[in-house]
Image (cartoon, rainbow, N blue to C red; front, side, top):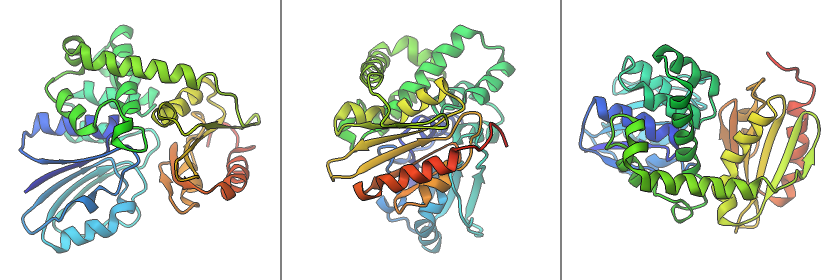
Length: 324
């Protein structure tokens, strides 16, 4: 059995598109909302199975990876999040790069020697890696209009991955992947599949308009904390709202706290664009937290921990200087 296991955001989806365009294969798709990262728990891998795992933290899936390898499965793993100890096993092939300026789709683009760079650029824009996306676009001589189209698509795909459950999303990630996978170029998707593209675009613009009316709960020169309600639009916009704020205020760190039905908060953290550090360590210091240096999150932050989180958030990013 062949499994494609991937994050339901722009990076995970676009990484898999590149791989399957280059290496067509009949597979079982395993994905979910962006926060659903322990995806290997959803399968029972056996001897001879081949697993492709994209854009989910190896550190968060280490136990399942070891179990799959012990069962005789083969694993190809590409990611840019916290990795922890990388297994040494003849059936394990890993491409891990935690540099804050890369993403899984850029890693796959390099692995495939640039076969489908437009999908990698789309993902990089979606992951708010503006400079990295522009650098790759420069090598292709893309004009500003083309870059803007790829950027918008990347943002919209990324936006679609956020929510507390699949029902919150406009499209289930596996279904969206299958629609996108029909096109060798993301530009063709934008032109030829206007129905899906417009639904993503209209949803994004409407949700962001509501988010823009939100005032900071806590703010200094170095950090800003926003609270969003337990409503579907807020769950969908939590990550992209943080990215948008980071782009507006590149020297400031941002945290978006979204109320949940469980009576706690889901947290999205964005390090300053001019100092992409420590978001992963900050969030990992809380039980359900993790991520990467530039962007991380906490799945369940108890109400009693909000003050401590804001204190640690402020302490992490105050007076750090602009660059390291």
